[in-house]
Length: 95
Image (cartoon, rainbow, N blue to C red; front, side):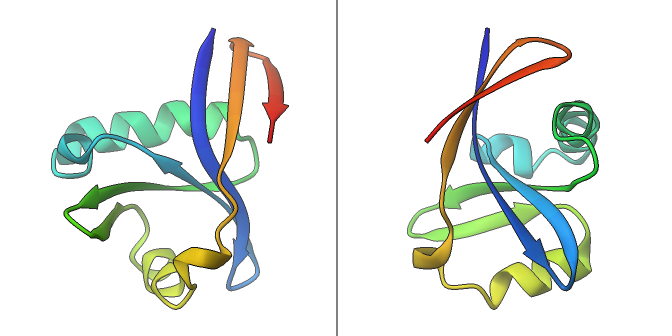
């Protein structure tokens, strides 16, 4: 099973899943792109933005327009959830 900590929201009218990842992943472009491709298959229909913490500030990787829209959202308004995937096509949600 794979557990993913993520938040699903709508930014500029686009469904987006923001996925928490280790900071090294956000700084490694090729690995970040592979992670986005993998998460896109798990959260079908959503655009993916990767998020990590750099000290006390969040850092992101993904579409620049979505990152700009995400920057206008208060971190306190983002509802993080745990998603557990038993296989490539199954998703369980636990708040």
